[in-house]
Image 1 (cartoon, each protein chain N blue to C red):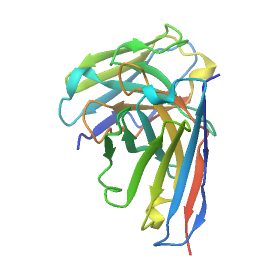
Image 2: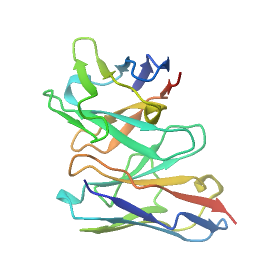
Image 3: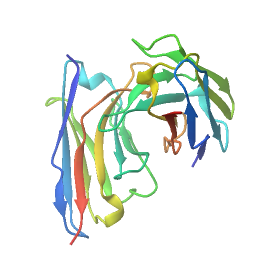
Length: 108
Length: 118
């Protein structure tokens, strides 16, 4: 099983700042099948990034994904108030399709 | 509108069974990989199972041998049969649709809560 480790666990930033979230895999997996999701309290998750770097439909361009192999990053260039939420990475290249434990992005 | 609606959750005793259903609409259900993802109260996301368009199934280690995923493409419905339930299975269970070209989840249901308790 591929273990995904997200860091930091909590990130405290202000609107307008840049956020950098990390996701490290215990081993590499096929085709950079790495996704990022955003989840707000009481809501289902929302797909932000698939294939490590492709934005999903309707996702603003302030969200970007990068990385390959075992190291992946989600960057939010300038935080908007609605971006404060929990973010999860998931690998779907090798079953079981594991999630990271999440990064809580909170308002400073 | 693309929609996934789960049902079948509830309170069940340890060792019991439950079957979840997910009714899909607004897309060609038979053409997509479908998943179940769960989330225990206050915890993170946990991938449970997937089934391909052709019926190939995949499971998390913790549910293998206890849970069975299936689909009825004629009814546009996904199922999760859960047996030998324990308190660790208590969670909201989400039905989740994979994308056309890969299994990143682009559509989620609202979730159905399963509580395992005596």
